Amino acid sequence: MAELKCILWDVDGTLADTERDGHRVAFNLAFEEAGLARRWDVPTYGELLAVTGGKERIRFDHERLGTEVPPAEEIARLHASKTMHYQKLIAAGRIPLRPGVRRLLEEAYAAGITLGVATTTTPAALDALIEHSLGAEWFDRFAVLAAGDIVPAKKPAPDIYTYAMDQLGVSARETLAMEDSGNGWKAAAAAGLKCVVTINDYTRDHDFAGADLVVSELGEPEAPPVHVFANPHGLDDLHHVRLAHLQAIMHG
Ligand code: XBP
Ligand code: MG
Figure 1 (cartoon, protein in one colour):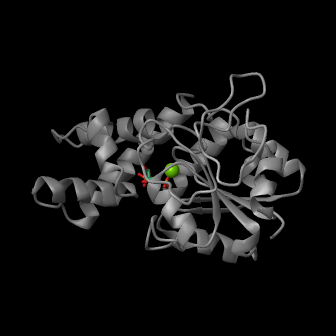
Figure 2 (cartoon, helix red, strand yellow; figure 1 turned 120 degrees about the vertical axis):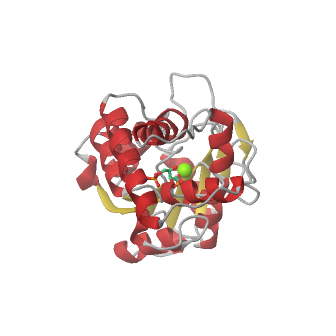
Figure 3 (tube, helix red, strand yellow; figure 1 turned 90 degrees about the horizontal axis):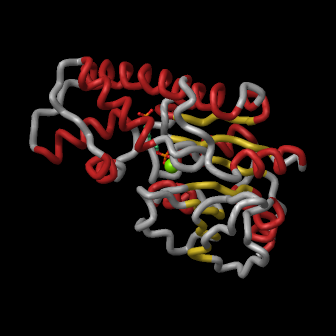
């Protein structure tokens, strides 16, 4: 039994549904701009999400098609262009936060819980989402922004979570992860964290066996109740996910 001291948030799919209408669209714009014929449609992109990290995903696409993998510098250039397009999409306000994210962040912040980000996405992409979707005050409210290539092994490796906890000086016992995907859940579990999962259309069939709560979204008091897919701690009153639920998970 431990007190909840820290919540580490995944970004893509958890804070906002960024993949289908954000990252995917930005990759396609970068392919087009580079004169490449490749386009990732919605189902194809879902398959490519098996690999985290945009540069890694481009490489994986070539590997699985059996086409020649471009040199690392070329992939990096293509990915830099993708990041620029992604920043523009985010700046245009195309991607709102998921239901309940702001509410729960505010509640936890007001309660003095340490908040951080642990994501595989590129720092520039994360910064755009904070600035345009969350609000610039969150640059200070998050005590750590752990992102991208800062650790070499991306999720499902635990490294980004371990890195974030090291930076904050908190232990796995007192930290909870918020995730949306199988790879994210595996990373959190491998780092020894309890984990709440909010699924989305790309991740609803992923394996979340062992997660501490699996729901459709965090939800809002005035909206219909969330769908609960797994509630191993037997949490009550799950119309929407509140800080009290996260604290109960840590006690359980
Ligand atoms: C997110 C990712 C990222 C984004 C694209 O995974 O895998 O690669 O899809 O971002 P998670 P970049 O939510 O588990 O962190 O192109 O900036 O890598
Ligand atoms: Mg995610």
